[in-house]
Length: 187
Image 1 (tube, one colour):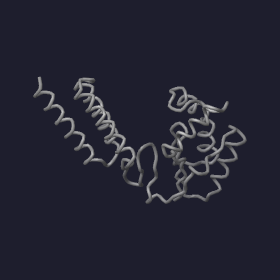
Image 2 (cartoon, one colour; image 1 turned 90 degrees about the vertical axis):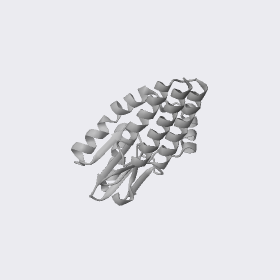
Image 3 (cartoon, helix red, strand yellow; image 1 turned 120 degrees about the horizontal axis):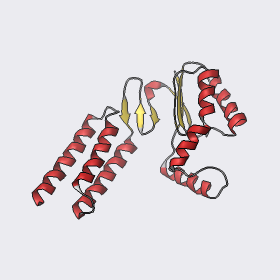
Image 4 (spheres, helix red, strand yellow; image 1 turned 120 degrees about the vertical axis):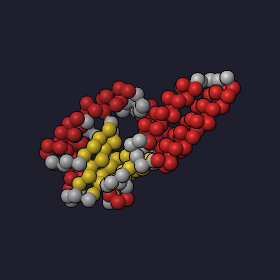
């Protein structure tokens, strides 16, 4: 099985891309809601080409991240590159296009996806707990309410629910219980 994916870069690389986009006439702002909409509209032609012309069944795309799980040869990749260049005037980023075996797991949208399970990416876990600690600090200073803190924790629980992350979910529950007791005790 061959898995092709456009891999999200490290934070430093992303920052460089943001800076280059600011100074060029090409591209749209990252993180902007319209960017997501435009990506879905513009890349619909690519979706149709992959599904109907190449007949690839195991294909997923979210904005500009895509995964193709294909048992065939690598000729599919060159056909996709030609289609992107000729029809959409786009190119795959060769440093971010990775070919791997499924048992290695593929990094996609904050998860590491294996054939029979998903794990949270380490970077996602670290970011999640860092944000929780920031919210915890705000809660302690009275900057947010317990309800707001709970919403944040529940949001991350939702992220965990899509992966094999029982221990992380337990850690989030423990953090919330601890803050609930502390806030209740101070009332």
